[in-house]
Image 1 (spheres, rainbow, N blue to C red):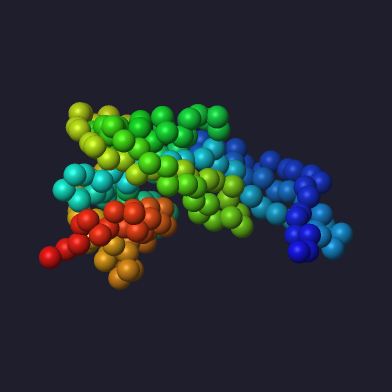
Image 2 (tube, rainbow, N blue to C red):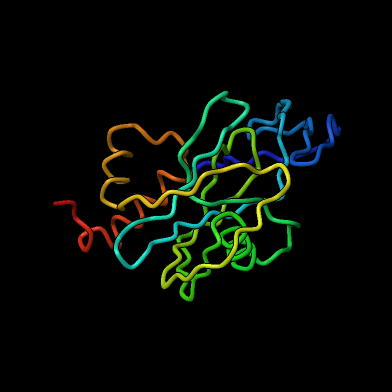
Amino acid sequence: MSNLEEKRISRKEIYKGHIIDVVLDTVTLPNGKCAPREVCMHVGAVCVIPLLDDGRVLMERQFRYPHGRVFLEIPAGKLNSKDEDSLLAAQRELREETGAVAKKYTDLGDLIPSPAVLDEKIRMYLAEDISFTDRELDDDEFLDVEKIPLAELYEMVMRGEIADAKTQVAILKVWDMRGKNYVLD
């Protein structure tokens, strides 16, 4: 196997924001030449696919400003810090956004949404055995919660009706794990 690794030789901070930072790195390529790399730095995030006992999933509809439209998504949110425990963050986001509290969590692994320009890693979880309490939305958070059958969500993904990558991946993973139990009539 050939050496594909690039090594950073310098970094310039371009922008420091609330959600992302942007840096311009200069790297040495495998052939010895130098090249620029623009990178969006992100603290990381979590997402949760909350599966109810009847096979429905708690989903959110939320306006996403960069795309100018409402998206259908699973609950998700950013970590408060790079070293925050991802399971605790997932539990927090699920409760705050939907009012759901799960007794069982299954780690579904990591999703790297855009590896060429973004260092964000999203840890995915399946939440089950769910009860409910009050939602605690952030002041700038506006979303509607719906319960949609897992089988219907799977079909929506396959028809291209769900655009959000983390939601697609989580639905497909959970469909593979649990879908045979929840087939639409």
